[in-house]
Figure 1 (cartoon, rainbow, N blue to C red):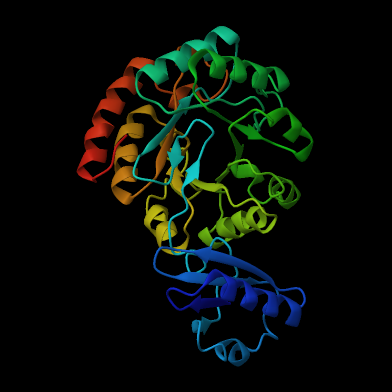
Figure 2 (cartoon, helix red, strand yellow; figure 1 turned 135 degrees about the horizontal axis):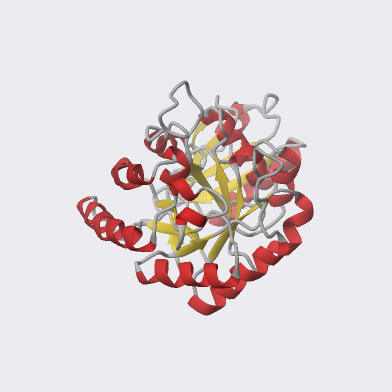
Length: 340
């Protein structure tokens, strides 16, 4: 349920209404969003017993009251009309007018490798270093990542280049290792690991939530709801392709998800064309399409020696190829009235 207040409603009257709702309806939480034009109070919980007329009786401040039909509440744009912009510690904003690029190898393999890649992607204009320390793999015999050592090497690359870092967590037990990681990624296979999502909801750190392999948009948003319901409102959604009948590409990259999400939610949306296609020559056209569709950012795999990569070498760009693509993407961003 959302309560839309009249413009110029004093904050003290807004708070009085919130206090009244809380005291009258136990189990109902109120989330206030003050926009430039309108203030909205979102009621979350079992609102079936909330009397809309009693709220409307506050005629001096209440414009209207509406029940929200979608099962997701806090991620819903109806609750939060303005786009959410997530600011990292270095001042970089995700969800604003800049297209943010996260680039780096699928897996951290050595200190030399990650620092070399970090230095090169930064020189090309990347804003964030991506790299996997814990790797969920289909085969138990495949490279599983350097784990805790991989996180330490990412932090060394961050110190060497100044780039913020994003890396994937696989279980709640690993969260303490990510204390100094700027963005914690939840991979496609863990999108519905609800116990992990609950734990991440207790943090104040940005969470990048990838879409599940076969998940609907509503299921994806409900997973984001788990994190936000726990108190962490700093969620970034990442479209990384879904499983369909098509076998030419590794996955089917759902570009239509970007404008759909922009319509349904206020959260930033980025696209991973590397995992979405699994083919290097498709990364550039899909990245361009993502920018035109309205994506807030891109996640691109870059490796200094893809032929010898321990994971996902076939979809990883060489640094010089990435550099050329970045030049091309800047023009697309400018056409859309944005920067990169």
